[in-house]
Amino acid sequence: MKLYFVYVLKSISTGKLYKGSCANLELRLHEHNSGKTVSTKPFMPWKIVYFEEFNSRNEALAREKYFKTAAGRKYLKTLF
Image 1 (cartoon, rainbow, N blue to C red):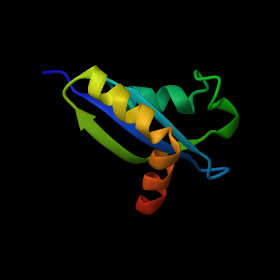
Image 2: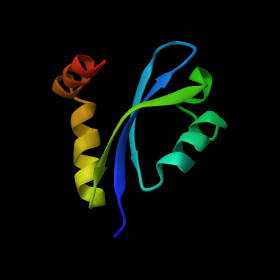
Image 3: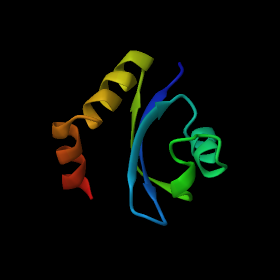
Image 4: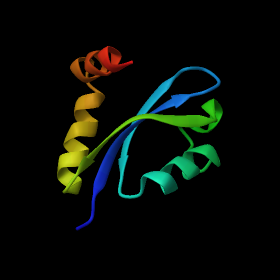
């Protein structure tokens, strides 16, 4: 069974948070840190500070969408 992930990255240089989802967490972090993602390139390097696993892509996308809302950002602040 394939797993999907929702993750939160933190920029080591600026402290900025980035939320995303993927099927391969290690590969996705490598892509962010090698400048392949335009939106995160200026804030490299990144580290994973939080992630959750899901059994379906739809569940992961729904959770990512929640993290990008005001309530989701507030929830994440309670974790860090």
